Image (cartoon, rainbow, N blue to C red; front, side, top):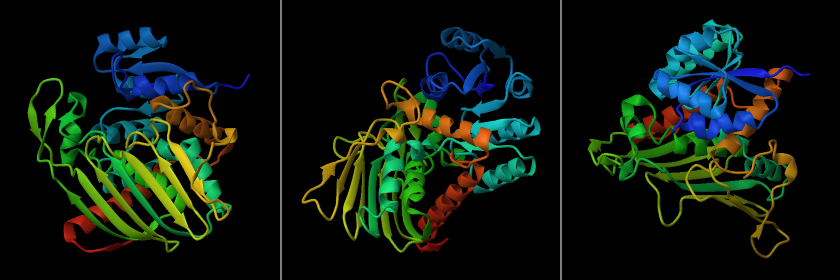
Length: 366
């Protein structure tokens, strides 16, 4: 039998959290993995989670999990400011890593972590799972095959989901720009990565990053807290291919458009829509108009782009499972199918250029 990848997850709670709703169901759906252990600073919660999800090992602290000989892959799902010291510890232990996006709190921290992983020959995967959803792979191949001709331009509009008038207590820390978890990294960052994965990188950007809401209200308590992370991000730029791109993300959720992406080519157009601004969370709709068609037609995604058997084939765990399926191949075959720490650096560099453009009012070259 093929040896399973033994996984230890840092930051698991029984009642909430990305680990519980995304990572654990994803890993349990894949034959390549076995969840061996979890850690949580609250031992009672850790025990509850281990019982709920039938996980054999509970570690008293994160370093014990990282250094355990029972763990091959360390999964980091805690808040962004805690990523760096945990990633460094996992690298020192020689463990492969799956770290939630963003990798570090800003560009400099991300570069340092990526360089350290490369120096120690540690495989680091980043949770930019939007590029792993079936629709994105299909869109990328449609464009490569010339279905819509040469890409002339692309437009994207989305909602931040949070960063609006109400915020859950668990996400309150993300409202502070200093914590590196604002909308420009979160929902906007995932969408930006998806666009670049399909169409290629930018060579110049101009941007606005604005706080229209100066505060937000904690959902559970009614407390009003300041919000310094921008809730309006607008970017225009040119891709290396020469295509013109525009993106606008708005904090919160809307009764109108929550995710809309259009790609215009010389021979046709592609439209991809989704119910919320993080297109990897809920199933989207793909429309394609070719030179031969008179209207936009709904395209079904071919089965070959679905790598995992999960029902339903959408929701938070599905895209994460797709990313884990790619990672298993990377570990076994030395491929580069899942986004790694170098991809995280590239995305952080683009976000830094956007931030600098917004601060200076000038366009930035990449």
